[in-house]
Structures are given as C-alpha cells and as structure tokens.
Image (tube, rainbow, N blue to C red; front, side):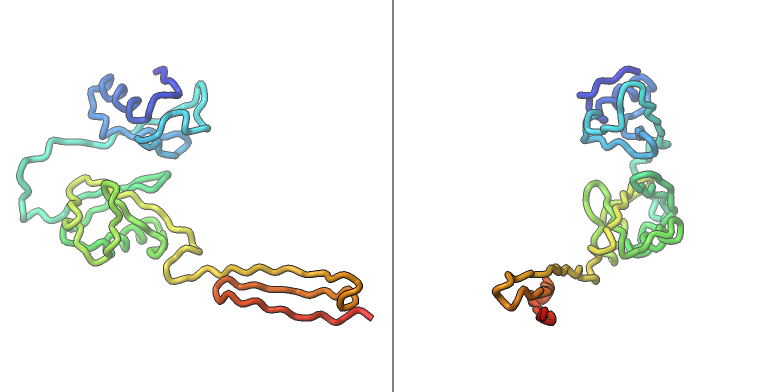
Length: 196
C-alpha cells in the first residue's frame, strides 16, 4: 500500500480499515516495535522512509450487548507500553493500585515509576475503583514510565562545582574551589593553600 509522508497515522488506519473491512479503532501500526500514534503524521517518524516495513496488529473486537450484567465482575483490559502490550484480567471494583500491582507482577516494572492513562486521562488516584474512571471490557490502559530522578519522593540534587583562578596580584594567584547547591541555595567557598 502506498502512503504519503503527509498522511496522518489515523488516515492510514482508516484506509486499511476500509480495505480490510475492520474498524480503524481496532488497528495498531508499528515500526520496529514502536507504536505509531494516531495524532502524528508519517513524516513525524524519521525512521520511516521509502520501503519501510510497517507492521499491523488487529485487536479483537465484538459488538457488546447494551446492558452490563452486574454479576459479571471480571473484565479484560489491554495494557500498552510504548513497545508492547498485553491483556490483564481485573475485577471491575479493583483499584488503580491493584492494577499497578498486576502490571508489576507481569512486567517487573517499578510501581513508583508507572503513570497510567485511560482515554487521555491520568489514573492519578491509586485508591479509586477502575469503574469510577469508566474502564470496561477491552479498555486500553497506556503506561508511561517516569524517569528515576523525577520520582515524587526523590528530590533531585543539583550541584555546580568550579574553580576560580585569581590573578597573580590577588592572593598570589590562588585557586578557590566553589560549590553551589541548588537545594539549599548556599555556596561553599574554600580557600586552597596559597602558593608560595
């Protein structure tokens, strides 16, 4: 299939969906195990050039009944990382925290680094139930990983160290080490031994 660089990923998915007679929402495009995001154009991916192979994954779909049986509490949600995805069975009344625990068990991803999103909304409250966020059967949960130094309980330490060399007429050409720490906004100046 020929596509132009100016086409959006969503337009490509719609064309594929029409050709395959499958809803575009159930199609996912990948290049070298990286998912192509709907809101971007093909030209936004420098890895794609003429002849690049684009992989297609079809998510199973079905027509859900118009009612939800309250006796059926277990649902399957798709957990998506930037380079992979898997399905997890959860209870409708489980909390976001318990979903993070299950993802940790499957992927061994540190819980403190996980940020979960559903339909563009962060699941920020760990103690809310999944159904409070509107998560239902076959919902997609996107996982972003916070960088280690940006964890909420670890404050970054920024320190600047440099050496001031004075002229020979001032302090006989002394070298003065200076250290500035951003956390406390204090500067430490130590006079090195003056050269004789």
